[in-house]
Each structure stands twice: as C-alpha cells, then as structure tokens.
Image 1 (cartoon, rainbow, N blue to C red):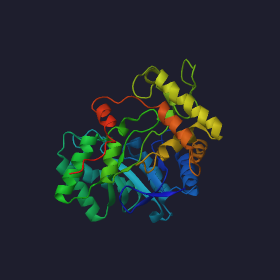
Image 2: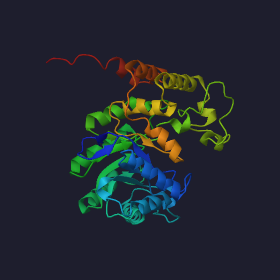
Image 3: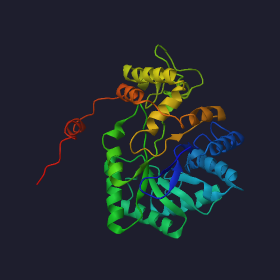
Image 4: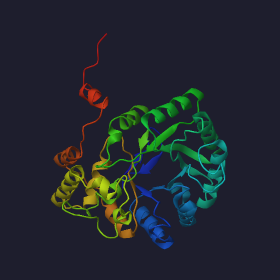
Length: 339
C-alpha cells in the first residue's frame, strides 16, 4: 500500500484509512482486532475513529489493540463534538468540552498523543476563535499532532483557515467529507478550495453506504436482506432505498458493474480505485463489518483503471451543478488576463 502526504504536511499516511465506526457495533472486539491486523499486514498505517462511536467503545477496542505495538508506526485519528452524556456541556466545540473530550479519548486509546484530532461537525453556537485557540493549545502541549475537520461547508473551512492564519494558530490540515461516485457535490467548491489551501481530503462513505459494493442491481424492487439499507426499513434520507432507487443511481451502478467485469475486479474495488485517483484525495476511509469485506476493499490498491474506464465512471455519475457553479465551470478554463 502506498504512503501519501496528508495535505501539505510532512505526515505520511496509507492510501486507505481504516474506519473504526463498526468496532463494537457491527463487529465485536475479536473481529475488530482481526481487521486491524489484516489492515496493517496489507501496509495500512492510518486508522480513524471518533469518541461518539459506540459512546467510546470503538476507541477502547482500538486502544486495547494498540497495546504492545509500535505506536509511531501508526497514525491514529479521532474526533470531538458529539454528546457523551446529558450534561449541558457534554457536546460541542467549546473550550471546556474539547479539553474534557481529548483527555477521555487519550485515556480510552491508551496513548499519550493523538496524531489527527478532528472536529466532527461545525458548532454554530461556539465562536470559531474559541474552538481554534483551544485546539492550538493541544498541539502546543503535544497531546495532538495535527488538526482536521469533518463535515464542513467550503465557507466554514475557509473561515477556519483565515482565523487560524490571522492568529498564527495551528490550522486544519485535512477535511473528512462525504464523497463517492454517487455523492460528488464537493467537486463544485470544497475540493478546489482544499487544493488551493493544501488541505488533505479523507472521504467517508466511499462505497455510498453499500450501494457501490455490488449488492445492488438494476431491476431490484427492494434492498438485499441484511444490508444497511434494508435495516433502515422505510426510513427516508441519504442512502435510503427511497432516496437512491432512481435512474441516476442505476446509471452509476451499471457503470461500476461493467468496469468490474471488464477489469476482473470487484465493484467495491472499482469504486474505491476511482476515488483514489481523484485530485486532492489522500485516503478514502473504508469501513467493514468483517475481515472478508475488508480484504475485498484492500484489493483497491496496487492496480489502475484505464483512462477510458475512469472517464466512463466519471461521466456516469456527473450531474449538472446548480448556479453559480454552472457558470463558473463554463468559464474556468479562460486564459488569465495579461496586464
């Protein structure tokens, strides 16, 4: 597995990141440890979790696995924001909650530092100066090495970078957005912003909640039994059957299946390979329920799509951007004015 620089930093991470959201939820501790072993054996070094995954259970499972291993061989990422109790200050990005949360995460992980500490979502109730100044003290103290953010709009990311720069505080060096062949709105503004600012991108849900895994085929009238979509039942929302059972989805799924058959790869490997070659993407976060699923996902590295195959996948999932992105896109290739 290749090692890539995280944004403009000197930190190298594996080109796939193992997401630990399933630890303690879909996979028990023994299965989670087997997945970690398999990931490292394949050359993986980058693991992502969050304090709210299982209300700390994911971090605890990862922490017990870390014991006895060379800590500096691994890049451990976790997140802060979500509620860890009923108290008024048990969530958010206030100074008080961040300082309490980082100590709890360090304790559960059984380590003296977190390589990448990420804000899980934007906190509209806390001044960004309070959040960033607190995060800066964590880097200065050595408890945290690098800072990242998840689920930010381009405006929120740009504001955060400006404020950090103004005060000479540690900036966000990567973002963790939703990005896959079925969810590509970050291409309109967030990805170009990250490229311009040297911010790494570690996408979550690279297989679209299972829709790009090969389980779904045109003509189905309901999701496969046992799938995440089936478990949601009639619930609506992102990734639900109601949301995804449409021509746009099936056009992408058809393309993924066709390229998979042509290349002798699994649909999941094709979808991940496409994401790995997108400009600005550092490491997609793969989440698995079992070693078998993880092994299949790991097969996304070590080979390449042809340019024709990549274009076919890209075009299958392309949608017309809304204003003003449509206008900006039409004029983006104009030659710069010479004064």
